[in-house]
Image 1 (cartoon, rainbow, N blue to C red):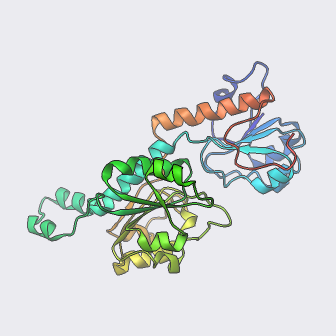
Image 2: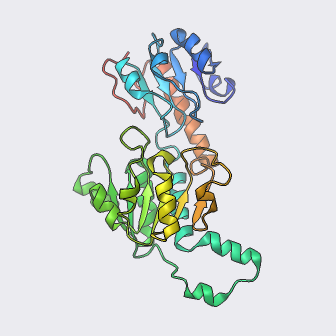
Image 3: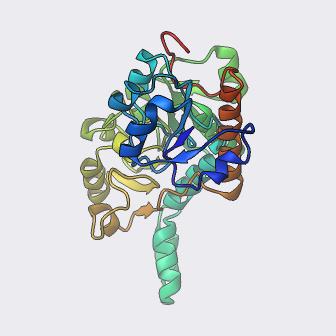
Length: 319
């Protein structure tokens, strides 16, 4: 087994069948070792790419296991064409990411960043805050763009706030499931027009990159809030910054960015109505444990020649 994850091989080897050899590799070493690999573990930092060149050399590989929710470092189409299954860690961190999304929304609705600055400065004017239009999540319409395990976990947490919950995903749920979750489906443009709070929970791929461009972000109602806990590349960042500066958008809570870490002095960093966090939504202690356990269990299944869970591609001819 070849691991491109930034972790010692012993982290994986100790939980796998006896005799399993785990080798830590960078991209060049991965190319060299690929013909001998039965399983490849992806890089959760997404810096080492498992691309078509690697796929062509994976002659005996049965599984590429990504130890995270996102898998944009893996060419899933090339893997499918090569008959190699790609799996991620499933819903291991869906709950923590959903909590972070709700926290971000509340922070924007209550101007938390500015409130902390005033409190720390010690000279705030009470009347100025009384005059501000602070919002509740109660009676707000929240649109969730992307409705997999994370989107559904967000919806579950919002129900207690009394929000109206809309969603959009590639394949609509059946009405009974929508009723069970307390959500209503909208086409993309309709979702944007109706969402006072927009939660972005999509994977990043060729179809979703810059899906939220200037035109679509402009469809959001004046005063709307944007929360992105998915991937930075889904949103046109300069357009978002412009709409935040103009006051069309009330605020944004962003845990992910086109470039990470975000460069010092970036447009977003200079805006008072933006809450920035360093891609931490899904790395709570429980989430890290469950990501590791789900990934190891999948690798062990592959070693036993059992079907893995959390498959993200449909290989044409599985090995």
